[in-house]
Image 1: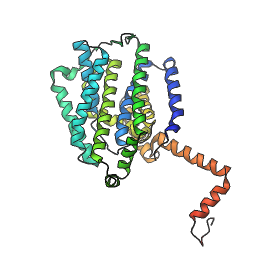
Image 2: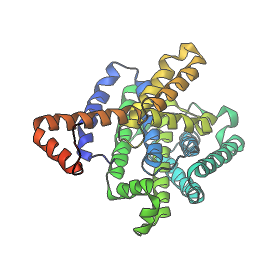
Image 3: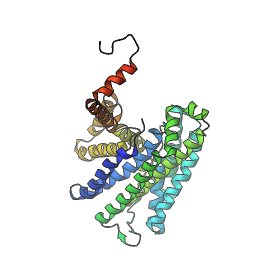
Image 4: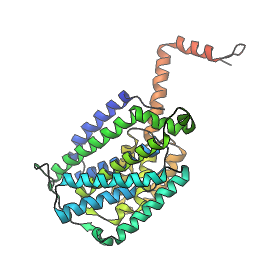
Length: 338
């Protein structure tokens, strides 16, 4: 069910207010990590939640953009704005190539193709001379952004990362609430019908894939600015599956689901770290619970509950409407209240 854009305005305002207050209560680096992965999760949700294409290879865009950003900043010393632009451009080009290959298949075949392409990029990054191999690119300098903002200060860096997160979220929000987003949902719900209506389905899929790759590239470049590191972990396929888990926990096809999922998964990793390998077990239990109990994810189930509550409240205010609706929906000769 497509959401009304006006329904998301209130939680977005709340999140913006929370983002302003949060640094005084929570470690800023953790908050910035959440925002980076929230961008990543939004990019994945755009594809799996609104087009119905499950990608297991988005780590190739995240990792490649991280390497490009880190190399330009560390080796060439170019401004961060240029480095980030180059990283997003690299992810976009890689997304176009990968998407042109992958969209020819559907379902599990699409997922396996993206996974195979991600593994190819992983081994390329392992052998390429500019990536640093298993050591990666470390101690990436934090530059001055726009000639004014010294990101060596964590508070200033938080403002920069927040601005990029809001820009990415605005693009994501506008995309899913545009006519283009409606076509994507039509393809997800009934692709043959979309084809019969004259839509070039593969073109829409490719465009959505490329846009998703671009947003993922933005997340990867932002992550390097925060952690000053680009490594093989960023391009490993496990990174993509972790973000898919965030989308599932938060709720596929919801606006705020990726953000909620990112907060939940990263909070578990951060605050349950003393438990060691048990963190993975706990994540597995939560995933099974979400799939079995909260099939629409946390945000999805909340929206269903809110819609049902609103309908019951409206019916209580206008009981006659409910009776007329029951009467119209009930065939003649039957009792609507057995």
